[in-house]
Image (tube, rainbow, N blue to C red; front, side, top):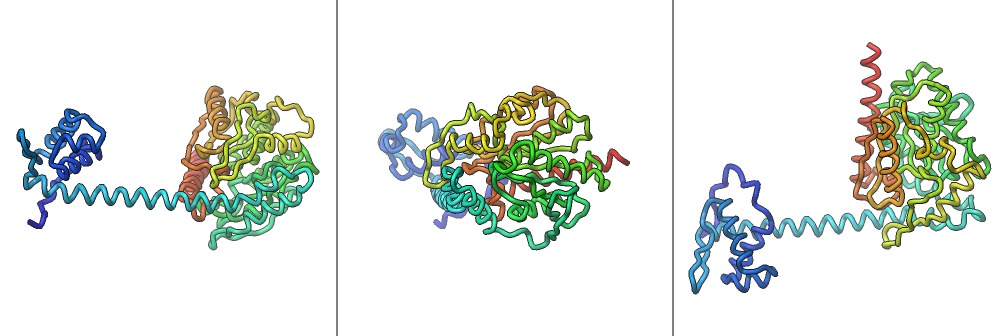
Length: 402
């Protein structure tokens, strides 16, 4: 017998893998007792699973008697298919784990030089900055994206994309002390493609040479410049990653305080320093794939940035701010990121103040995983969703304007 049968018009949705594993065990052992021991089940539980499978399939698969168990012709046909199905599933899981481990190791290698310099920041700040630039230099912007320099109200900036003027303002990360517009060209360029928009990346001043509020002042100048070029505030999306997410929230609260036009929305990639006290952060053990960053190191960055400024100032601590009136927020973070709990707190706090805030979680351990969009599927998906968010903001504002 070749085992070929006519395909069913629709496979029963209720069949589960445990049913197939139970059937294979009984078919191979031809004994319910031995099969039950093999599966660590009781014989009655195993019998119920077989009965359920037969009911779902609609045919008898096994002939049972007091002394023997036999496969029916239908059972023989299903056995071959079930074995292939489980084998393919196991192969798929093995491949997925292999790829996942390979990608995690690849990400860790990119981050390792940067993380290695975190603990030495007081003495070797330039090493950290060089390592950050070297990380980003290993990637390239999408080839279809143009890059040109712009003087945005006196703040040197880069404009990326196929569209001008820019409707996306990107605030780069780097723990307030590193990162650059030039270095962030690959990520900003990918976002420009995803959003089908021009993306403006300011070269704002960094701590400790220029502590708070220098970076915020630069971003505010650039935002005002965008408005002066004729871009309606309602069409602008502000995007910030890591510490850039904190600066983005400072910008929104400043605009609210000064009663200036709000952007149409904001996207936060793995927002850092949402709580400058780092009160809920806990050190994470290294797994050999995701280099750990200590809470003490994060506090050190924040101290360099704030330079004695009060930690509970709503402009630097959004969890202490009245967020009512802020535009829609999209927050993306990895489930294994050290800042994931603060991302939850931020979204809950924003929603409590009536803000339309969305939280998207990705099964990633690394911080600011969107940087790795060129090879990490979750990062590519996150950028696509962020781009769609920005497009919706822009097109919605255009439609409202008539």
